[in-house]
Amino acid sequence: MKKILNDLYQHKKLSKSEAKKILLEIAESRYNEAHLASFMTVFMMRPITVDELSGFREALLELAIKIDLSEYNTIDIVGTGGDGKDTFNISTLTSFIVAGTGQKVAKHGNYSVSSKSGSSDMLQSFGYEFTNDETILQSHLEKANICFLHAPKFHPAMAAVGPTRKALALKTFFNMLGPLVNPSSPQNLMLGTFNLEIARLYHYILQDEKSNYGIIHALDGYDEISLTSGFKLFTKFGEELINPEDIGQKRILQKDIYGGNSVTSAAKIFKTIIEGKGTEEQTNVVLTNAAFALKIVDKNKTFEEAFSLAKDSLFGGKASHCLQQLISNC
Image (cartoon, rainbow, N blue to C red; front, side, top):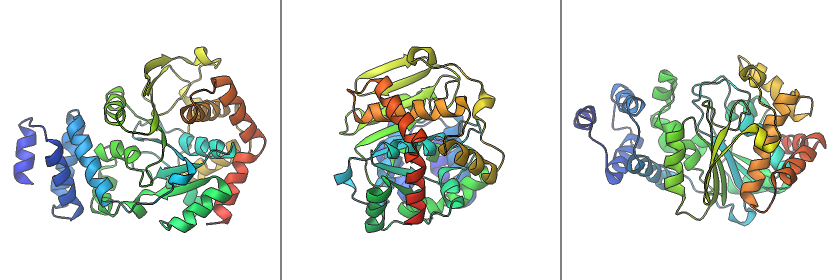
């Protein structure tokens, strides 16, 4: 690792094969915590390349515990995290609203590293038990339209970097990798990124793959549609800038989507929103994200049609029912 670090400090870039090899060695716990922290820090100081991200991704997918959910035409709705905005759990709430429309969701997630509450923190607080048993997860999809793939259950390689990531408490390239390594390889992806450069990297990596995808980056730094600003949307069909006004939405303030200062307060906000009792701003954010997720699965849906389906899921109690079904059947 000393040679690798010296090369990187001299501004050398890794090839795809080099990046893959290093991550495979990290997974084997070949390096100490100081070297790992230094290695991760390099990619905070300069942009990661397509080859580096692709190589890291290949290694994680090669080592992952695979699961076959292909018969369900699932979507994953997940952000990189690390945007530092302390919002409520928008992508997780969005996932349940989408599930409430009948669309199957294979949500990939983890504990929070840089915010108060990640998707795993949230579901665990509701009593959900993590599993990598394919039969159980298929049962969750059939009964609740959603299953949850807790990353550490599927990516044993991540155990080698968990303590270092937690100690750093900063966004690292592992935040960038999370949305790209769902072990069930869903046919549809709605991915959020905390900066535009990563959105373009994702676009470059995914454009030749079979999955339908939408990559979201809000121009003021959110890794989801925040309605606090316009956002970039990348799909197989190109790139566009969408402002809240373009889709009939009002701009909101950052404080309107604040997520609380603990898992407990985040869970209270989550339950209020999923029960249809959130503020107008909270509600419109999750409905807008859900509408775009539905449009990724079916590009022929208009935003208005998708938004209406999402609204019916939330206010008709279907999203909340999916949550209850998931928890009660875990």
